Image (tube, rainbow, N blue to C red; front, side, top):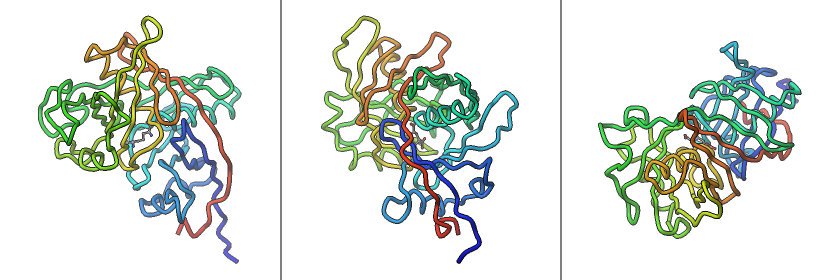
Length: 287
Ligand SMILES: N[C@@H](CCC[C@H](N)C(=O)O)C(=O)O
């Protein structure tokens, strides 16, 4: 029998966008996973299966309660993940018994607070709109990016700490994202690749609050049922184009998020958190 202990994990999700969450504060092996191990854990047939692997780590900034590391299913480390931020905030608030928490990410310090037993609001920081911040390979107007693929054209580029290209279409549900996503994700205009959103503006049901149907092809993960940063980027893109007010319900495959682009340019995201089960990672996935 192996004397190497298995590593505890928790499976969580935000609107079906699912995560394997490891605690690097309790076991430093979680802080040293290389991309091939991350891919093995994320594999839905041979591993645990997830869209992103999240490692909770000790903060390096004294004003933060916890730090989170974010890895896509393909093993790439990224700076932002809206749905996982709500999950980590929920865990940190459960640990501390507090109603609010500060989370350190590579995209910055994010303030989160509880809005109910399994509802969390996160200030996702400012939307970044300069072409260098997306980043793009060359100077371009981020409100009208000159790229296209099949029926998709003229996206808005927004960074929420990670890159997004939002295409507005008549009917987001009829877009073949499986076919169009990979080429757009790897388009040469995006030196760090990009997340790709397709969005349709729906009739509003109350004044001052838009409604947007959105689907996503995530960089490093493919089609997922929801993307928190994608929802933030889509609301910002719609408001910049004058298609909605600065607040909207974003209707994703996995459910809805409430998004508001605040006057200080920060984006507030509110949505649910779910903890599915806990388990032990087989040591064969760690070596
Ligand atoms: N699912 C996430 C975004 C995860 C990272 C993204 N795929 C990227 O590569 O930037 C979310 O909820 O925001």
